Image (tube, rainbow, N blue to C red; front, top):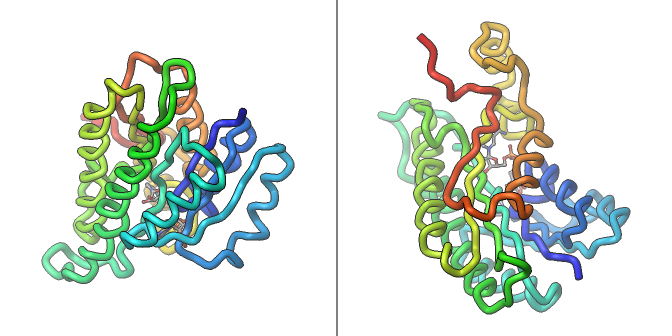
Length: 255
Ligand SMILES: NC(=O)c1ccc[n+]([C@@H]2O[C@H](COP(=O)([O-])OP(=O)(O)OC[C@H]3O[C@@H](n4cnc5c(N)ncnc54)[C@H](OP(=O)(O)O)[C@@H]3O)[C@@H](O)[C@H]2O)c1
């Protein structure tokens, strides 16, 4: 029997690389996004080549009703959930200095990146706990936060706060669920070439040229997918609540 993975924001960018990678490894894929089916319906047909079951669900992660309905639908369609990758996320629509940041932008970013992700996880965990373990695992949850969980960006404070929140959510769920065979990890990407970073491409190109990243290149969505793939496997059964930086070494402090 194939295991089933939910990938939020799984239809494009980093999420799509994760969906493809897990499908290739034989996971059924429940792919979520807030856009209509028409946006991703054609793209995700590519997963058919791996002989797995896949389906796209329109789900606004910030909306309680949408989250609950989607989890019920996934369980009805796939029978069980073994992996949850919390990847959906947004940047502020407009970068503004911390002293100008608006409550509207704060609520939007936190509502999707942190609150939505937290309560979606809660709904999925309720399902995972009802399932029998497979080997030593009942489930794996991977939270895609960011180097912004640590790094200060004064023109997108709400994003940094939302990602720092994900780090604590990771630790909370890891501790709460360790005794139940559910493993929880965090992946912190650096600058990854996707739609999210396209608007600030020049800024980051320049930083790379200036040698600000020890590994001097853009990250690829596949770099993040590779880390997720390792963490969802059975190699780390005495490890939970950890994070891994996928940032070209950007987190390293130098003197
Ligand atoms: N790119 C980077 O450099 C970078 C660095 C660090 C961390 N990250 C994090 O990695 C994750 C993926 O980023 P990305 O670069 O791949 O971004 P992206 O290309 O903009 O994709 C974002 C994904 O999130 C989904 N999403 C947005 N709002 C949603 C909502 N309300 N409900 C459900 N899904 C929603 C989008 O789907 P719809 O458009 O259909 O809603 C899309 O699939 C994000 O959490 C981001 O913060 C990215």
